[in-house]
Length: 379
Image (tube, rainbow, N blue to C red):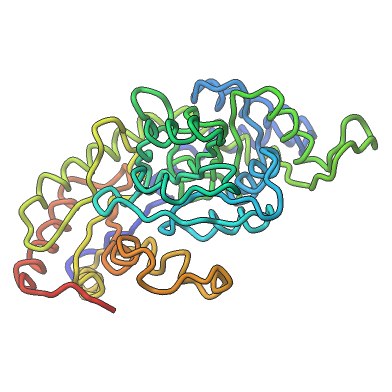
């Protein structure tokens, strides 16, 4: 093993911010406003302005953000929501907790995002909305998605949990649909010290419902007007997020530079494919993904080379054990199932050095040259 390259390096991100982070956290201690205090209000205002939306409602996780948005949009038991099978299970989980039924639409095999051309065939009289996922940071192709939604009187909830700072036709991910959910899990491009999330929207009425939902449906002290929950973001998380938000664009650009180097150096590697980037979108490269029919062998090879990699995701959502009641068997969504067998995430964090990228690429090309005849798994 020549060197050790991690999949992500939080020390390299956070250590230079140590004094600034401590000062922000100390301000919270000085304010003594630990729940929905000034730090939360500042972050909500700044994040909304960054995205170009009217409202940001900070909550305690991305999954909660999805569930609350679905609830506020009026999802009722039995209502159907079109979404992708190739996503973190929290996307489907939120629909199910909100009482809805996920109706899955296969992905585009080149972008790995939901295929807009397959939406119409999945519609039914029970369809209420579409939940596209901006997977790995690349926005889904939103124009045809929004066209389908408009012509069928549907709302669109963006799962932007991986898309902080990504754009589609010059607009930020999160500002494209009826509402959007973000996660600030520590490993995200904009990450907190623990679980955290937010819902953003242009809709004043929707924002009002969301603020009620996150705090026990309370409109005034001890005056509860709807059935809500406790989903409030604490002030320490918001304070950190404000510090990191100021550097998000710079760090996203570094990820994009790293991604361009990977794409150029790996373009002729036998049997290897990179995710196609659509011209309308600019990814934040939360993940840089390659695909290879011998993915598991490639991952093992890279481990021996001292390069950490990750698989997002090894099992499509519809094949998770908990999803058995959906009644979807293997083969239902071939593009998603093939992606789950073949995707591999490479290190792409901003502090990655060019020499490390070259070493990773050389190692992958070495593997690909020695496995150029491998057959695609049909399992």
